[in-house]
Image (tube, rainbow, N blue to C red; front, top):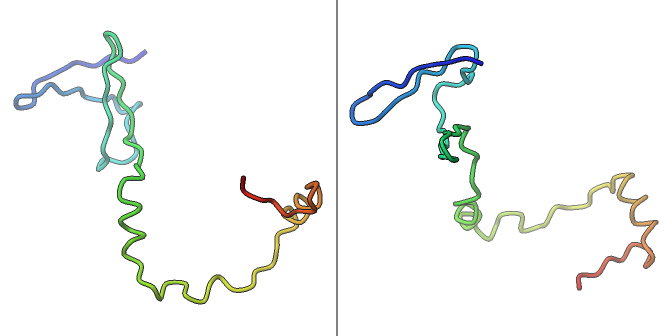
Length: 92
């Protein structure tokens, strides 16, 4: 187990992460939470917030002609052949 020290950085406390535990990226956001007397630090996972706003920026011409004909993957054909209705899956 590695040890490190807490130090002051302005009005905050900071922790120096030993090189053996350092993240490869230096410009990243981290999430920190207190669990009992421990602090858990981990990379901030991308959220889905804003995804709908990105989709809203597509205008009516985006994929207006659909996706076109696409070859069906072999695994999809095999899966559909195992369905009792012959592959016609209905939402319910």
